Amino acid sequence: GQNIDQPTEMTATEGAIVQINCTYQTSGFNGLFWYQQHAGEAPTFLSYNVLDGLEEKGRFSSFLSRSKGYSYLLLKELQMKDSASYLCAVRDSNYQLIWGAGTKLIIKP
Amino acid sequence: TAGITQAPTSQILAAGRSMTLRCTQDMRHNAMYWYRQDLGLGLRLIHYSNTAGTTGKGEVPDGYSVSRANTDDFPLTLASAVPSQTSVYFCASSSSSAGELFFGEGSRLTVL
Image (cartoon, rainbow over all chains, first blue to last red; front, side, top):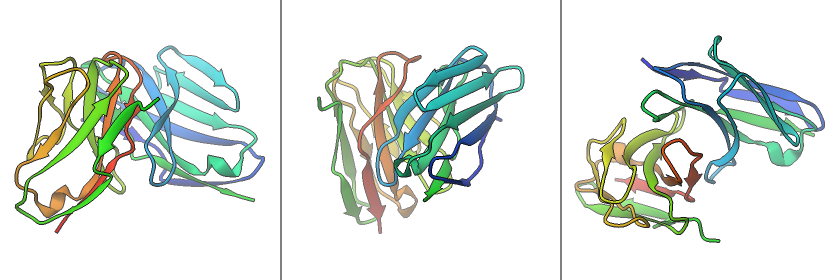
């Protein structure tokens, strides 16, 4: 079956760096997405990786290794507003998105 | 910019009643999706539409139906609601089946 694994919850300190990991087993691969979801709100797009390597976008970076079925989202200079759930999703060979359950990130002052 | 609008925002429904969740987008996106989100689970696809006039079943389609009469609207109907359909429902759209998804604000449905 298809599966996306990511930690349920992580805690980090304001101003620090945190890495959220995502491993996947899917039938085919057509890209990996990271979304941010604040409590009670809709998910919003953060990043997209389809080739191996690092994509940087301001304080957020996302890395992909297709051979290892692995990605991470790196958040730098953490701010309180970064407290949210981070969702990893993989597009499979049928172009359907398979979603992880999300990682709840708690930022402490 | 409105993006995707869902209605209602929340609803309490008696078991056995029917309900239609509305979704409208103004981005002229071809693809539209309905997901449900439950605590501890990833977003699960209910139904999708790659273009107006076509629909497909997702991972959890039972008890739900959709229609796509035009590009902008993609309503989700529960014919006879059951308590297990208590969830937060998100409508989403993308310019193509390979593009990023844009989500509506969600509809919280409670079936008693």
